[in-house]
Structures are given as C-alpha cells and as structure tokens.
Length: 259
Image 1 (cartoon, one colour):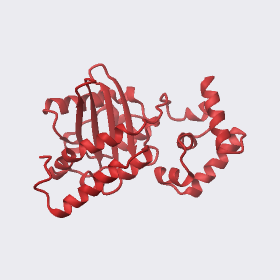
Image 2 (tube, helix red, strand yellow):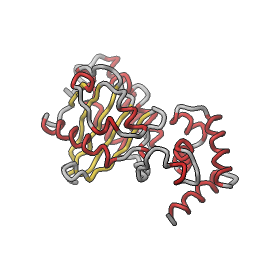
Image 3 (spheres, one colour):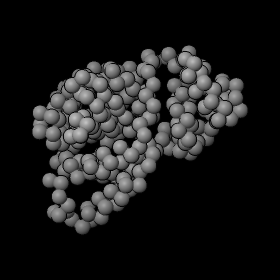
Image 4 (tube, one colour):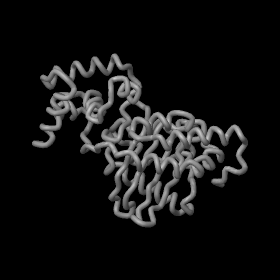
C-alpha cells in the first residue's frame, strides 16, 4: 500500500515535491504552510491533531495545526478531550494500527470533544469525517497519533493510501518542530482578566510574537491581514503600557514568572 511503484508519473512528481517541502520544514509556520499546500490534494483537512505520550494513562501532549481562526494548540484543553483521543487511539490499535477512517456524520458519534467550549471544540462540530493513523515508538514505547478532520462527508481509499505513504514524512517534519506552549485552559471570557486585559485574539497574537513571527506571518497563520495584526499590536501596546514588541513580550513573561 505504501509503495510508489504503481503510481502514475504525475503523482510521483507531486509526492516528490511534497516530500521535499516536508524535509525543509523548520518551524510551526513552515508546517502549517506545508499542510495547506499540495498536501491538501491527498490529505484534505481543516484540522490536524498530533498527539503523543502514554494513552493508557492519558498522560499525553498534543499539537493542533489548522488555518481556521482561533483553532490553536494553546487554546485547547487536552484534559477535556483526552477521552476522545483515547477512543481514537483504541480504534486505531484494534484496527491493526493501519489508517482508519471515521465517518462522524453517519456514525452519529457525540464525544465530549465535540462539546468543548473552546475554538477547537466549536470547529470540530463542523467536521464530517476523520482519518487516524500513527507511529509506534518502539524505543520510547509511546505512540504518536495523527488525526485529520475534514468537512467533507467522506474520505476515500485514496486518502488512506496517501496517509500510509506520507505519514513517515509528516512525523519527521513534526518531530523537528518545537511544540507550541500549552497554557492552562481558561473558560471563555476569562481571558480578559488573566493576561493584562488582553482579549483572546490579542493573547493569541502575542503567543506568535513571542515565537518571533512578523505581522505578515501572524496574519497568514490567523487568516487576517497584516494591517489587522498591526492594529491589534497597537491596542496591545496601549494595554501593556509599552512601546514595542520586545517590551510587550518582556512584560508578559515577567508577569507569568511571578504568576
């Protein structure tokens, strides 16, 4: 199933481009661009979850990669959707650890994860199908599970075959990128009082600023214009009583260290 030998020449060229771009991934931003590029031809999705750790004890970490506004790693609560991920892992393991398609709409599944009161939970309610696959770490004895969510009603056999082919390169790309900070989950509306009065969007922008992203890069990640990011930054400076990005980052980090 994962052999390239039976693929037509045009598919071989496209896979070669995808793999070459994957090898060049160096940052979370690179990873997002890669997944939103030609990869979408073979693995159509709006949200990708990467989850690793000990699924039996629910001691897991996660990363969320999505171009949907607000659907970010640090805005999701792993404790709240760990039962959902544990169920996904069980299905994948019981299926012989092969690619597994889940028709969310037809199965009528209502996991707790779909009722999460956060941007990820709300986005998941709009998904119709999911594809699961993973890699077992025989040295660390932990698995890394990849789940793509799509608004398409079905994901066909070609998508399963593509996942089988591309998973090693996806895993390599993700392992080369430092995971984003995962802040403690706060109920909606609580952000206003927690981080110097910054809104959820402003806190999100500051998370990317701390990672060294420019306004243009942040705009691309959040699907907003660089001008909108600039306006947010001006409001952030005013709320923090600072004059530039470095001072803003320093003030937030000092408050967290004394938190």
